[in-house]
Amino acid sequence: MIAIDTNVLVRLIVEDNDIQARKALKFLEKHSEAFISAIVICEAAWVLESCYEFKKEVLVNVFENILRVDQFFIEHSEQIWVALNEYKKFNIDFSDCVIAAIAKLNDCDFVATFDKKAAKSQLFELIK
Image 1 (tube, rainbow, N blue to C red):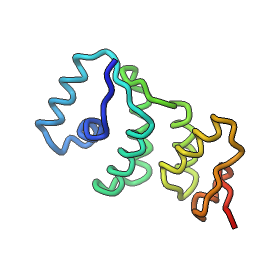
Image 2 (spheres, helix red, strand yellow):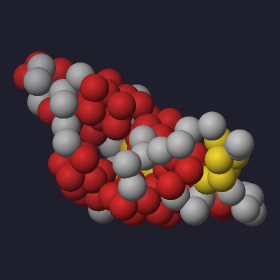
Image 3 (cartoon, helix red, strand yellow):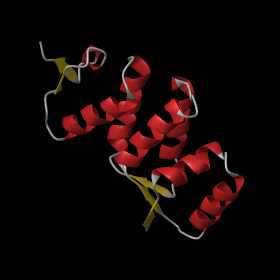
């Protein structure tokens, strides 16, 4: 198995650089499995929102599709699904949702935060 970084994943999604997108696709065709870390998923979300102005609904759809690709082994895939569901429901940064979902996996009751937006989710508790 090989791993891909954020740049490769973004090229595959947005195809804004034809040469790199083709190279990435061709490279993946040579390998039966590709590992994508939770950090890469978070970075990709940030890049797609901030640089490519993906709206929440589009980003959710993109990640749901990525999670369904058999060739991809996504680190903490179950927690990424949980994070996507929280992200859909609340006005919270996607990476915060991933942090909370992984914390819950590790038997944490909640994530302590100063972020008032994140504290809208039951996965967080606002420090007052």
